[in-house]
Image 1 (cartoon, rainbow, N blue to C red):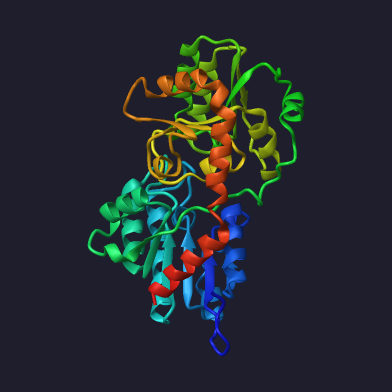
Image 2: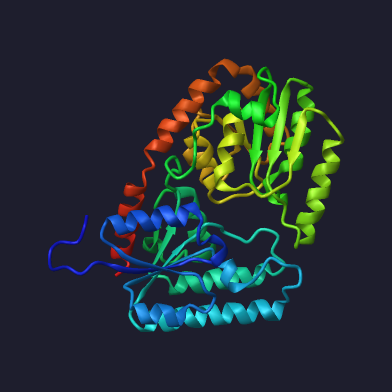
Amino acid sequence: MKPSSGTAATKVVQVVPGVAASHVYCVELADSLMELGVTLKSVETIFFVREVLAFRPDIVHIHWLHHFTGTQADSSSWLSRFARLLAFTIQLVIVSATGSKIVWTVHELEIPESHHPELDKMCNRHVASLSHAIVTHCESARSQVLEAYCSGCPGKVKVVPHGNLINALDNTMSRSDARTFLKIPASSLVLLFLGTVRPYKGVTELIEAHRQLNRDDVLLLIVGGPILDRKECADYRDAVEKSIGGRQNVRLILKRIHDQEIQTYMNASDAVVFPYRSILTSGALITAMGFGKPCIASRLGCMAETLDDNGGFLYEPNDPSGLFNALCACLENVEKLPEMGEHNRRLAQNMTWHRIAELTLQAYRGSQ
């Protein structure tokens, strides 16, 4: 799909918040688009319009709006959020007026723990109306975005799956070496939660469901950093620590995990748990599948479309016993877990970035 001789390459500016500039998703997508002949520039600044206009792109592709329109800090006032939202949308209007097409990838339907959800929805509606194409990662996400922000323009919303991270993350550590490093007995069955510890991710429910198992040989490994500049998140960290109550078969590692460390925790585990209360799409799930891990997940968003019964234990998020029953099903099928993990790895291998880039380029061309 490289441009034919005499045809100019599509020029794209990928507007990515600075905190996500090195995010493996953005890096893999950018690299794969350039392999297809796209001329691409990444812009990270909040006030991006000057850089964009200087580049004169065909497409301006934006990600993670809330980093541009506000902050997660408790000190962020309604007025400051509104001012940033206004500045952001004005820049998009200027860019669009010069002939560039706006493409928005929706990673989150709403901002978790937002203090100003009405402003977030206002922002999303404005961006949806300005966008020439909107990208979601599955049909469920597409339906939710249509219902919430652009019910009158269904043709605008495209489905482009999330690519795998198999080649992007280190995976050279053996199971035995990972367990030796973490001082985990070889005989333990390890359930892993890996990711930022936030209220919507259901960690306290996971701890309670694990307690109900009443199995000393089943280790729950909770790994990830809390967000301490938000009171809700700081309080949640305290609630997580309190709910563990000194139990020896729950290990809490509260720190930010760098990409090169992920393999240690993944390879030490037998299954990975996603007890989320709400989610649109989950790169963490794709990561676990790429490491060949069976997954336990709530039937929400793209997780229900990405996992199947051959590789996961899905449960209804509104079922009070759903997570516990899913954990029990996992323990009842211990001998099948390696096979389930391999099934997930095969599924992940099909989510190639070359194919993702092709579909993204189709979305770009369909917007013009």
